[in-house]
Amino acid sequence: MVAGFITFSGFSVLLYRICRCFRRIYVKLLHAIFHALAFPCIVIGFLAVLDYHNKKGINNFYSLHSWIGLVAMGLFGLQYAVGFFSFLLLLICNKGTAGFRASLVPVHAAFGVLTFVLGVAACLTGLTEKAIFTLGAERYSGLPDEGVIINAIGVASIAILAVVMYILSRDKSDTYASMSQEAIVINAIGMSVVAVAVLVLYTVRGTGGYRLRPAAQHPS
Image (cartoon, helix red, strand yellow):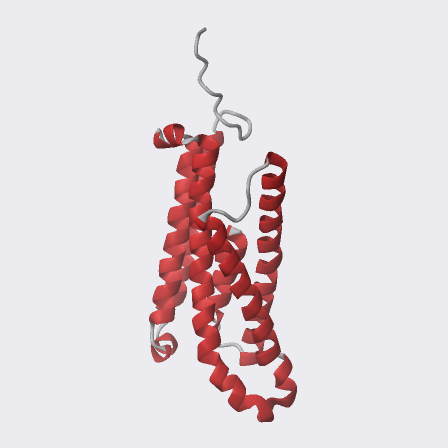
């Protein structure tokens, strides 16, 4: 889910701002490809959660996380279908559909940003829900290694969201006048990846692999 909603979708949203030297048709194709890469990540994550819940006898679609996730997935699928048909297939009749496609751009862009924000929200609520259900509130409050990793991924996701929203809020003329956006994106994503990598290495140090801490044993 994180890879689909944040990594691939985030890059896809930014392509029209950071790939300004490319021909527009190439940017459209890259935009579609990144979303196509996000699609299986989201579907696999969704099916994995359903399978886990069904095996454990846990109810589905009752939490705020699941509701946000369903809305985000629905918008993602609708956006991809409408965008692929309107901005790629209708290029077959370029001149005849130019007006329609131009009028659809702001609507598609607005719902694209909304979908990305909802995707980040779904990931954050999912991380919190998983931490509490798996570790337990008492253990999570003690900030074990697993909790540190979960929190770091959440903070990195918020940082990526902030960077994406900042770049999208900039005027397009500013984007063409400066190269600072690319530097911001690269630095933010690079720092996020490094931070998560360091935390993972910290967790598995001296263990030879990842494992959960054993529960405390109480003498009888």
